[in-house]
Image (cartoon, rainbow, N blue to C red; front, side, top):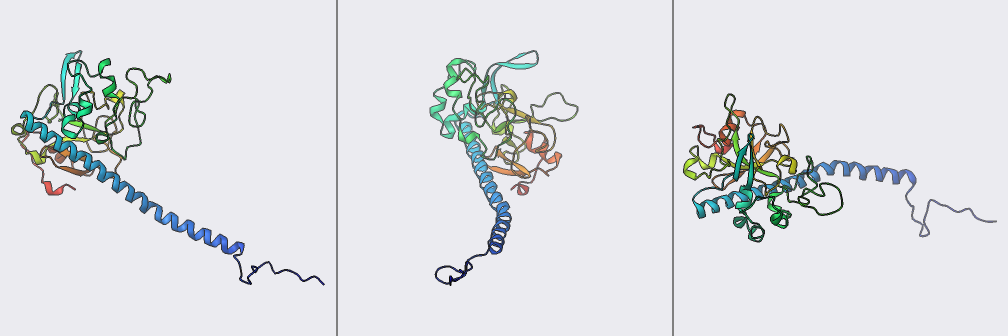
Length: 292
């Protein structure tokens, strides 16, 4: 008589997993993964925020090195000519002028600053994606941006003039728009004026030079070579993604200060305190121990 086989045991006599037990194990692994995933994502974002802060620190030190060399910070934009209320002309950016001071001399040497930033002779230089100018957390892009560059702007599959130009996730601080005042050039990075530390009367440690303004493309002046990558603040941090303080770090932005330091600013900071940080000589003051 043929003996029936016991399928619940292996050839060695040991009992194997039943289907129910296997499903229970899978459920436990899935639950642990769900619990660990937010912690892993938070750790990754913390690392990206630190990397972004390091970028800010490099720019802050580059601005100070420029000041040591020339006696002033670079102008926010130089080579503009007012026309119908908007600047045009060469539009050389602060972020172009500090290239030699952030270990990007080779890119600086590719540029001809005697002509407009978007002249054909500057095309090769403008196509350099500079890591220091990019926040690793940025993923939401406005019109005119594809990753770290402008991408193929007309979608014809060719590298035409203006295609694949390097973007920037940081902007020079033009100032804070105060209600009732037409001009907002009360910051450090303004048109055609190079500010010295003496002119930062509110204190170098309490005045922002550069801040996160991420995700912009060429349509929104988000090119490191374009002198219009400066912004004036109108309200709270992370309120709008268009020439305002904006980042994809949770609850704040990184900023570079005129004393060479970099700090993380909470988006809960009051508008009064933010206005004091964005302006250079209003006689207001913010305690630096509130920074992160």
